[in-house]
Length: 217
Length: 242
Ligand SMILES: Nc1ncnc2c1ncn2[C@@H]1O[C@H](COP(=O)(O)OP(=O)(O)O)[C@@H](O)[C@H]1O
Ligand SMILES: [Mg+2]
Image (cartoon, rainbow over the protein chains, first blue to last red):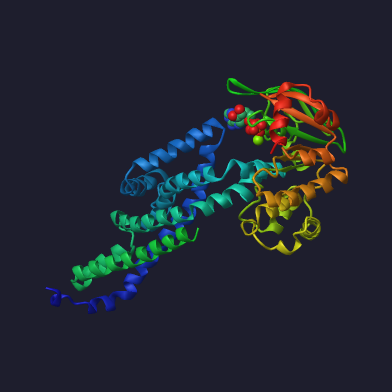
């Protein structure tokens, strides 16, 4: 069986696969950075004493967390062109969708992080004269972020794996690239095996980083 | 300097401060003592608006703490506060702990803030630790840094909430020494503490609290000589017998 495998096709299609991996990484990084930024704002809104703001943030977070990601991807891809009248392309649509979706998950992590900062620290920040936003910026968020770093990274690993769902709208990520290459060379099995290995290695390296980070604390 | 007028506070149904009134004149040192849960921390946190109160009035330097139009951050910047658990910012170096308020709240230049910080670190005997992080210092050292951090803001008065009760016995003196020096320089101070040696040395008056009430508010000699209430007598004999 295994002797029937022809792994030379992988070497030939590496540049093509690399272009797919590049999009996968771009999507992961964009959704991570954008998601953490938006998620932090959502967490602040959810913890805010302004009731409408807190309610809106809670709804957004709960709705996003209760819909399968692949449906959000499809829905956004199909509906936005109807609303704006112009298609935005599978790649751009994926970038926006993932950022908005992941924000809900990062928001809950950041909320836990903010709540993990002790009352004493919050009081100390106010006591030297910080306003609410200064206290958030200089005292609370840096500590929240530091406390939650392993969890934020774990979420990013999940995000990295989930990027393969853009397959549904035909955006050319690593998985899609491997499928195209597999068809071109008529060697789909080798491609799938190789690509699975790539996903595995990257996730394994990230998990290892998380483990080291949490042990260091 | 600090005036409390019939201050009452409730947490939901339970009353934790009951018509507390007192005055702290400029340069005075007041020691607040009393059993655990009697409302000492709550009282002192009301003074710089870290806790809200429902009745009465507190003024600091003529500014009403409870008034809606009061700029609380500005008021707090003028009131130094030292906590039981130091509460230095763990993600910042000692120097950053001492400069960030000066730069971000008072608008001082980085250079001026740093000069002030190093001067005060020197004063509490910790200049060589300037670039360390709080976690690398002992409790006593951290508390001295916390005092320096408060002094960096040039406060008009200082509040202390049990500054030595989280410390190992051998570190208590180094912190009390700094506080005694501060008192002798004329700083207005309100100190929650059970260090009666400190009270005898520098306090002008001693306040005794019980169940949210100020039970005694007497000059030091009178307090240690002839405390009137039975509760205060019991409390004193308990902590002095240690
Ligand atoms: N956040 C809070 N919610 C409800 N009750 C509180 C809270 N903080 C303090 N208390 C209550 O208020 C009373 C006074 O507390 P505190 O001022 O900390 O006393 P002390 O500093 O004298 O030990 C205590 O009975 C305490 O249980
Ligand atoms: Mg207390």
